[in-house]
Image 1 (cartoon, one colour):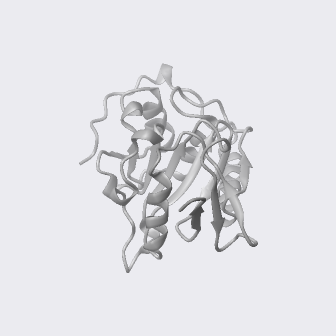
Image 2: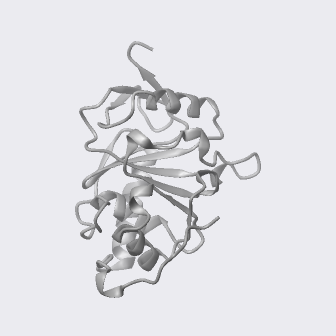
Length: 207
């Protein structure tokens, strides 16, 4: 079920990329690097000013990856505001209120995020058609520290996004246990992103 779309007021839509081809390619390279090297931090400060409700990095990732064929689940706080209109105008993406249908999701309140297991994990024929979640956080440091191991990581590294609910990392561990199925995560804080694909094993001190 797609969310109802009201008419757009084009006078209120903020600009997108100044040079769509060059800028989207630059963002895409950084997103791919973030996913290929989990835990590394990528800077998207060159991206345009985002609409209210979205940080610069989250908006840039959406502007690069969303299109008219990608069903998007939006955090409820974004669904009736300028961010939804901005995405509809620049990406032409349809919205859904069902996490299990979504190709992408934007979460701005990680404390109230639906369970990761409610999003699309892919299937045996198309495991790559799972949901990718863009999770906005107050920062990529300062939260509970997770140790990361797996493809793209030499030995071990760590990541500590702020603002996650207490059981979030337990969900991430369960998500990894389903591999090759499961969702992929992109943490976004202001101008910065870090990737956490389903192939990464997460250990929390004390677990």
